[in-house]
Image 1 (cartoon, rainbow, N blue to C red):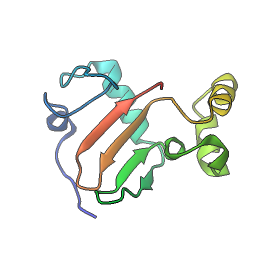
Image 2: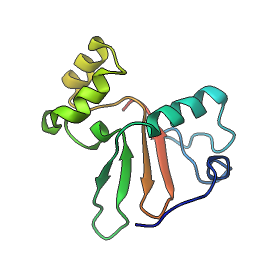
Image 3: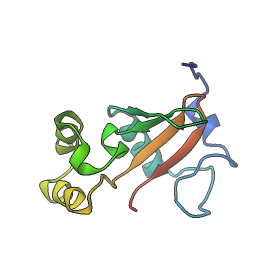
Image 4: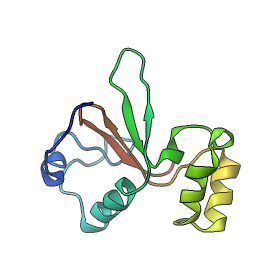
Length: 116
């Protein structure tokens, strides 16, 4: 695994950091969004193996698959920061769709998104 030491502010410069599914804005993240990013990265993570590509590190770990395949640990972590109603909503939807982040093993930002 490669260790990345680039400051967060540099990683969020225009041109590479995406925080919406569409062609959304790049760079200049607002203060509340920076707090969301920090909170998200303070959760457990999981590694998703990508065939023919770099592995993807995903925060929180609960954002890596169908709800029914999650183990107790990532669900218990969500229960400490999300309401029972939100947990029920994720379960009914079939996946965690709250704020989640993805970074390749090379340290390339992929996303910070919420929703579906």
